[in-house]
Image (cartoon, rainbow, N blue to C red):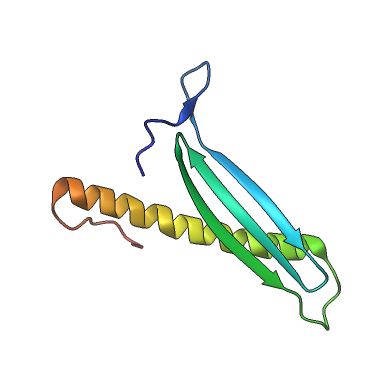
Length: 98
């Protein structure tokens, strides 16, 4: 993912923004994670379902849903990086985990 439009602070460090939006009920937690880099946004979704035999612990559901969404986002970023590299070099990228 190119990040020339990423925001910069006074020291010149680039910044990425991550926003999380939760939707919860007794049985499940859903989250939408949105990564913003400059004018580009990448969304990812995560969900956690509570087993009816488990106690109602909202923090556990949030942690699971967010970890799943961030994992999805990580895979999308890796795929974008590989695609960008390969389109520039016109050869396979030697990136592990892609």
